[in-house]
Length: 82
Image 1 (cartoon, rainbow, N blue to C red):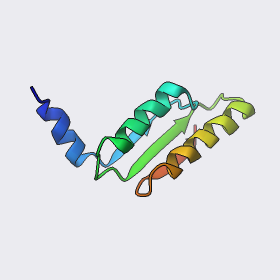
Image 2 (image 1 turned 180 degrees about the horizontal axis):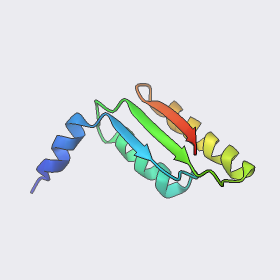
Image 3 (image 1 turned 60 degrees about the vertical axis):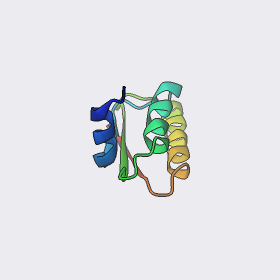
Image 4 (image 1 turned 90 degrees about the vertical axis):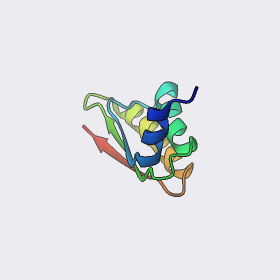
């Protein structure tokens, strides 16, 4: 049985928003899923980092978001410091 609602969303999804992003493996896995799962119309991933993140974790999270940008030619990754 095929999930019709999933197919429909995949065909029209244009943006993914991730809040409280700290560059964790699960967060990266979810965004990579959208990039690689055939979401042809996905144009943008907006990543919001928590405002209270220390500098070391911010650098780590930025590095992970840059990795996401490099993994897709058609996707724009925008990072926001909350």
